Image (cartoon, rainbow over all chains, first blue to last red; front, side):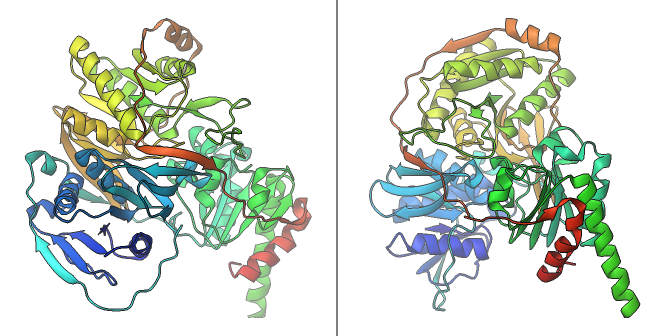
Length: 311
Length: 250
């Protein structure tokens, strides 16, 4: 049984992961039927309970399905909401829940590999219990295309207790439109404590601006109050996936690397040629970022001017 | 506020020979980053509204260090569930915390709010707070970057694509918070000294069998990259721009 919070790539990865467990595959969605392929039955929970996101109400619907259909496993994408809903199911059923799995070997107990430390460490674990609750670490599994064919859709209205309905999204406050978002930026230029101060980020902002990118930083920088937490790249900050990540004065602590694993390429500016981040980098310039970063910006400007003159 | 002692891992993780834990002989310890913000938020709430704050941990005897650190930031007292260093799975952890909260509430009155970090830095199980909330019969919201109390309601905010989702939970409630909720303070020297004299209520619960049973830990293989050194100092700038041009970003 796969819980589809939001259709898309991560849901496809969860479906692929669940398919590997064997047996007939069912999917579940709250409120509206979602487009899903390669499953026998899509169960759709209906009712006012699902008018806005309400984790306990969704979990109760899943509990009803588990009790009715006795699936071997309930799987969801390892997103904030996937993990939250399955933790609610786990609490309701008092069964174990393994979050952010990368592999599972069918059997009882089920053997899974799951991530720790945001991916810097893996754990092999046995999951006991009558139904296995698992979420799938995003981008750990390649999603497979399935032959088209619409599933049978079964609609049901779960029975909720008052407690299931208490916690729900009450309102959504729209954010003011900002610049390039860190999570979606094609280029991220970041700096660590070596910036020296919040003003020290001027040269980082300049380079990011020239490349149409976003500014990032390490945890040390946000803890010092130099940059807002929204700029932090890391396990407890933003996970980025740019075409290139330019990391200046960043040593490469596991906390930070967990946030930039998704970068297609990494260019490092660091005084220390032995810094751990070089083991994950494609290119490096050794030296003082305060000299190197402005020189890169000047070089880009020069190239842009030449191009403009030629054009 | 529930916290967990975790090592500061630095740049490279090394395991113990039995592959059951991280080799920590040369490492310092802290609490999970989300929890640092939880401690700060609990202290601010008490400063603004009055009352009492308690920090709770399930961990080895050495975890008293993290309880003292939290009390140095302004938490009033501590509950230490002393383990023998073996990991407890999330269900067992939640069970021990529930018993401790019930015992404390029977003696000292009910907590209006129980704070958890959204997930621990090390195990990342995403569930202990939610299990505790169910056992106590209290509403729970997680993934929070905003927590404010007004009357008998806690307003909780999550950052989502395009804005913030707002929840309003009746007290008493359980909240799972994220780093970025606030900017934690640094403890003063007098506060550190005061923290040494604050009370720690220690007890030793019995560890049940794990139902999410750790078999072993594995350090994932590195990406096996060897960075190409483009040069030393500012003279390397043209080579950098050439790389950026090849990628198509300059």
